[in-house]
Image (tube, rainbow, N blue to C red):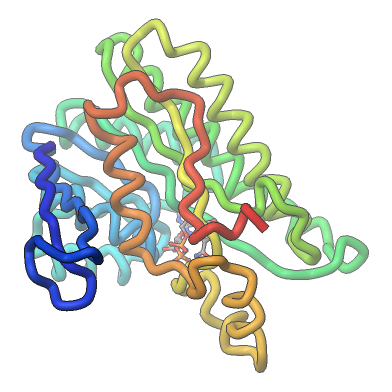
Length: 273
Ligand SMILES: NC(=O)c1ccc[n+]([C@@H]2O[C@H](COP(=O)([O-])OP(=O)(O)OC[C@H]3O[C@@H](n4cnc5c(N)ncnc54)[C@H](O)[C@@H]3O)[C@@H](O)[C@H]2O)c1
C-alpha cells in the first residue's frame, strides 16, 4: 500500500497556505498476487470485491444469486469471478472453499459479507425466521471461516474480515435474530483471532451502521425512517458501500499484521451516541 499526503484548503481546494488547510490522505492499495474469497455479492460484498480486484487481487465471489454474480463479473470486466452457492449448509461452505482453492491456488484474504435481516418483535419471530437468519449470518460465518482457516493456518498467512454490524453492540428493537448473529460473529471472530494469532492469520470485523444496500432499501423507503436514522448518526448521513472498502482493505492488507480480534466500527459515529 502506498499512502500519499496532500495539504489542501477545504474552502478553495488550493494545495497549501490557508488557516483552513487540512491534511487529507489518499490511500492506494496493492493486492497484486493476493487470492481473495468474498462471500456476498450484495452492496457491500460487490464494493469490496471490486476494490480488491482493482487493487490487483484475484477475486472469487460466492452468492446464492447468480444474476448478481453475473452483473459483478460484467461490471469488473471479468476481473471478479463468481460461484453461485447457497451457503446455508456446512457441506456447501466446505465445497465452495475447496473449489476456490482449486481455482485460485490458495486463499490469502477472506471477507464474509453475506447477511439477511427480518425486522419483527421477539414475540412475532417464528422459528423459520430465526433459523434462516442464524444459518446465513452466523452458521455460514463459522463454516466458511473454519474451512478457510484450514487453508490459511498451514500456509502461515491469512486475513479474515467479517462484516458485523452496530447491531452486534446496540440493542435495536425488532432485530433479535440479526443482533444475536452479529454479537455471535464478533465473539466467533475473537476466538478465531486468538487461536490463529501465532500462525500469521489475523481475524477482524468491520461493523457498519445503516448502509444503503438491498438489505436496507425497503426499510429506508418507509415514511420517516431515513430522516430518523440519519438524525442518530453524528456524521449526519447513512453509510454507502464505498465507506466500507477502506476499512475492509486495511484489515485485508499486510499493513494490519498486528491487528487481530478487533471490531472496527465504520458507522459515522453511530455507536458514540
Ligand atoms: N447494509 C447495511 O445497513 C448493513 C449494516 C450493518 C451490517 N451489514 C452487513 O454487511 C453484510 C453485507 O450486507 P449488504 O448490505 O451488502 O446486504 P445485501 O443484501 O446487499 O447483500 C447480502 C448478500 O447475501 C446474499 N445471500 C443471502 N442469502 C444467501 C445464501 N443463503 N447463500 C449465499 N448468499 C446469500 C444475497 O444474495 C446478497 O447478495 C451483511 O453481513 C450485513 O449484515 C449491512
